[in-house]
Length: 292
Image (cartoon, rainbow, N blue to C red; front, side):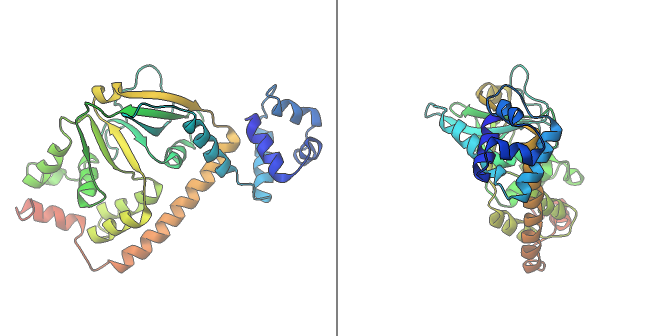
């Protein structure tokens, strides 16, 4: 955290004494923080948060730059893909496909191309950890799902939303799509997307509105290893420490992104409110044999 404190003070163009006065601590305390001999407690970090917000210090950008710098320092073989992973409790032992079953693509180990998505996923958890990871995609049975209705229906299948048409060819299509695969590559259903896809499942928006929202939100990709063979191809490259101060700024960005995503999606959904089919209509058609 010492580097971040130096960056904040430099951005504010303050001396250590001036910075200390702003936080109601001594010069010696700030000096110890910046030399790595002590860490600011939660109260001091809360004061820093308030000061940075007041002075519009771009702390979130500093966090992303820190991750970018650490990523650039990692040398990978050409068959490995650099990705990011957020864990609510940290990784202990070997990597395993043990995320909650009703995630986007079911049980697995989730990684993404967008560091910001992994950050916002874990910012509410004090024991969470952020990792830079890589995966060797050679020799993995894999499927890439584009941002279309197949992506939405595959998510629906894994979230248990299609059970009323269990046994139909339409249901079996999505059941079989990821069977015997090690790796699934698809769009991230992050905070910005959750609002739209949830509204699709409950029947508030059509598939056309959903697909156009997917395109407009420009989500990153997620790589999900769903077999132990896939997990064995994952390597943890670095763990990035996140302070209480950093988590507060990440939370703010997460809330802003969600609000922006909802606003954008609402506008798109209005434009497509009469085009396409609703989720229950798709299932009813599949149940009657009209949709394969």
